[in-house]
Length: 93
Image (cartoon, rainbow, N blue to C red; front, side, top):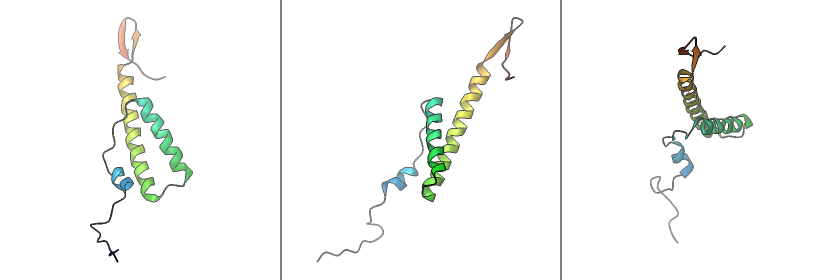
């Protein structure tokens, strides 16, 4: 009869757990980041995620939010308004 005991070192490790620890990739665009952020928020609000996945989703959502804010700030700085022949920084009214 084969021995069914496995040492902790020989046990297979779950792939999802190790994949969640990898460095997330930067979104291809603002729109991709926003879509992923919307999806994550919907999943978190559903209340069906295990705690570990919820924490990973929160971290990723925070990274995506930071990315989106950075992109919006960069675009805002590039938008200029012509005022009496002079380019001035755009300010939201």
